[in-house]
Image 1: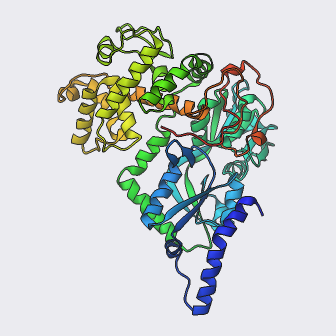
Image 2: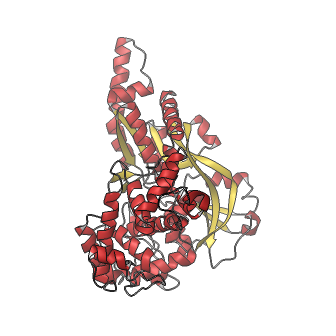
Image 3: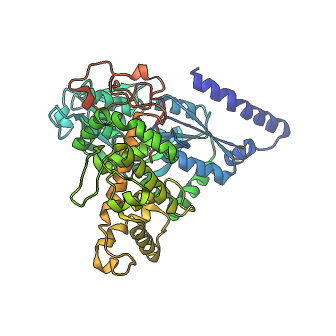
Length: 506
């Protein structure tokens, strides 16, 4: 019995045995699944570590599916207990044995699930997409892959879809790789070891920036919704309760807000931008990393967020000067520099300290009732366009019946500040409102990459470029691609081999 299954058996099976024995002796009927959960006081979830599902963030566990499960547990009035599996194969095995209440595997519904599980759609749509190394000729259809191999993670949606589309009739070999996650598959396409593969589109979006040599060729089939899996042995009370919770979250806008939080900034780095950013991470960031860390600590902020702001402002160039007169690594205006006490804007240390101080001032002006991470996103927009214009956009959102305390709502109204019919109604007037939206999205993406590359304590090390490895593996050595890089390793997007958890998506 696998180690995880043994732990789960030890933690849950005795409870079921005791309940069963008690019911036999008393002649009572077995309580519903929801009642059993409430009696035990715990909702058991089995999942895998992935930026699309669950990971340990800066402030604790998070992830799109985790946030939904947490709200379900709160509705039930019980604790949420999450256990992580090595891969989808283990998740399905745990559910087949009824050792967990819910499985979060990042899978869509499949015909074979009808006899094994109950399912519930979670609001995220995805497609199976064929990916290839950019040095290969782009395939336009499955017919172009005749005689070739497609690499897949084990127990994914992709194999069934490929078979239904006639991949085997095209003489395509389907190779599944137990123990590899989507990031592991993408890493091997990046290195050239796997010329072609199939992954889910949402997994590709979340990992694309780390693998700039991987390109999408074409999608397979229609978009489909990802689902939670429930053991068939359970009755339908938990599924119904979970469906009710998700419907409520959809109606009050929280589901859309969570989708924006985890997926809303993923299109902000193209191939050139990703390679350029990774190059500067290796070559420029080490020169200023200590300053970012020191000043971020002084102002109680994540140094990687401060560094992301600096990259957006100047690409970490201390002598940067814009046509409008803003200067330095943090691109401070003369008035801002004077206000916060910066004498030499071209001095890297003064500029970074000034940027950290100014961001803290801006952050403090955002109402405390606004929860994170939205409060930080508002602060970034204010840092860029000014607090007055941000307030104008928030008032416009509120007058339109939207929530002025949610970034997903307010970011739709910021661009309107460039249109006379809208800015004429505001206190502070015209602003290039699209710029703060792009500004926030860019910084979120830069921060995302820096968080995946390093921890708050560990420095970026340019001397020994990290090997390509799976971001979601619990045993990085087993998933590491040992083949040498085909080009300059400092230009290759990669992850540290000792990365054991996925840092937060800000």
